[in-house]
Amino acid sequence: MNHILSFLNYLEFEKRYSARTIESYRTDLLQLEIFCAKINVSSVYLADSKSIRSWVVSLLEGGCTNRSVNRKISTLKSFYKYLLREGTIQTNPLVKVQSLKSSKLVPAFVTQNQIRQLLDEIEFDSDITGCRNRLVIELLYLTGIRLSELIHLKRNDIDSKNLTMKVLGKRNKERIIPITTSLIRSINNYMSIVESEVIVNNGGYLLVTNNGEKVYPRMVYRIVRQAIGKVTTMEKRSPHVLRHTFATHMLNNGAGISVIKELLGHSNLAATQIYAHSTFEKLKNIYKQAHPRA
Image (cartoon, rainbow, N blue to C red; front, top):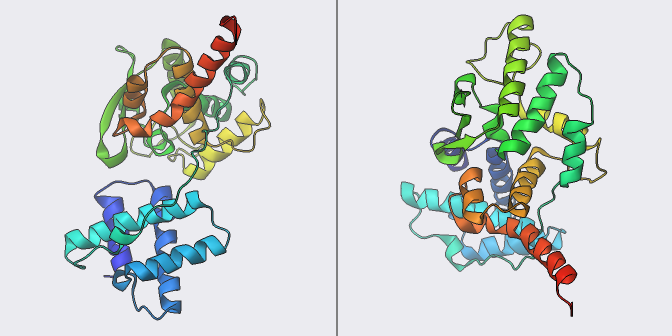
């Protein structure tokens, strides 16, 4: 089997990565494969550190940002680590390839006032489409779950009695998230409409299309983009923006960074630290308002 295909199958079936993530890995590796062919390296698994550094240079010359290049390097690190473990290669060519310096981007998020406007003032239709679209926004904002986690939510993951929701995250890691009574009401209302109007045959998934099939990434992207567009003109309006918004608002309202880490399902605290910008901005504003010499 082709080494790239074998690696992608490993990501899908063993690591349980999302389809979007796997496609990103596929794109990066195929780009490298095309470059290797141009420099007469017959396969990506035969590429050495010099070849990969040449590829990095070509990416930069082609207008790729440091951040994008670093993401591609991260893909290669996972790929060659896999090949080492499988015994396909004996040395890792990435050992001599360093990531580029890249300024940290502040995550895009929707303000609290805009979220209040979206959920309290904007009218969603009362039919199955409107109830589902509103529930998508509520689930993403009130729990901070990932797109893939949202799509794979099942009805029996919701515990109405204990006000919790079970989520299966990256690497099959399960976590329990607290939810509100208002979210439970929205879920129950949506499920009652689905039961009365749709023949569901999708393995018990919570969110479904009007034909009863499990919702899919592009559909959720469209729902979120249209909804956020009603309250802000910001360009980035993806499901992940609502995850950023969840974390930012929690921190701004007193939640500790370690709590956010557990709710988001991050494997380490470093991944969560990027959200601390919001708390720091709030502290700066309070300082300017409160200190007599500020």
